[in-house]
Length: 341
Image 1 (cartoon, rainbow, N blue to C red):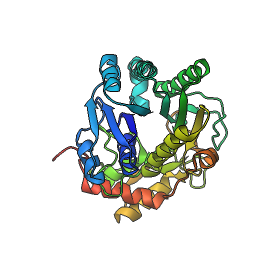
Image 2 (cartoon, rainbow, N blue to C red):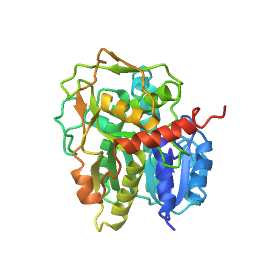
Image 3 (tube, rainbow, N blue to C red):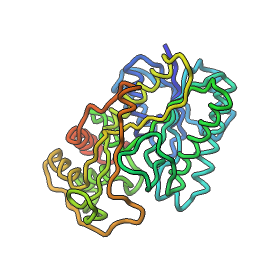
Image 4 (cartoon, one colour):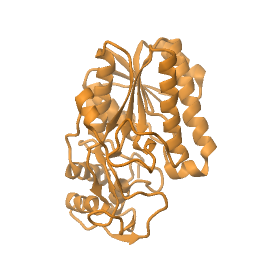
């Protein structure tokens, strides 16, 4: 049985990926410091899959602890999710983001190389395309970012490119996510943001469940079909399956490589379309108001996902109604997320 190390495996995307790994016969080892997640996630993963997860509460900045885990286990590949991830917060504490995200990755890569583990799937982001590229985003576009968080993704991609040039044993998939939403259809795991949600879908879900009064829609005068911003949303289970496909490609290809792949639907939905679909899912109106645009927001972005389809044999299978249905099931059955009471 192949042992896969998942850093940040109790987070939103990480937990769903652990479920899919377990269900496809992999043994999963999770490292997470739980700074932005909850250990209850592990119980939920095991309930869904009826399989166990090997868990270490450790910080990737603790090189000695990480080295000990690699020494103990015969790890075949790493899926690297761990990192601070709030765009807004990163502008307030940029040095914390740079230290945490960059240093922890460098230490992880050092330990991987020491233990001859060179297969890596990296959790990147569509934010690496910046503001100036045309739509849809294609993997060969120049990279930039407008936030410290986004710049850590750009920099880590560069770390990995340089590492591969210096040592061709590295075998890397850079997965650039668009907007992951939804939840596992069981309703047992889903997105559980700390404090006020930064993203649209969990905010709508909290309005629907009565935790928030109303949604602010930033911008009603964009050059889109209904005036609101358009984004490429992807069901988190589809996204998790993309990681399995990336692992499979790394394992079967005859020559090592470093390749970037967009994981998105390849089309966008507007804010008003998301609201309407969520109203359908929860059977009640969502209170919202149109506000002025936020600085730095663009009218629309979505992926060209053809490379992932051709090379990973991956494409989305779920639509906006599926995303809203599963997000509502999760939120309505877990109004306080993974916390009790």
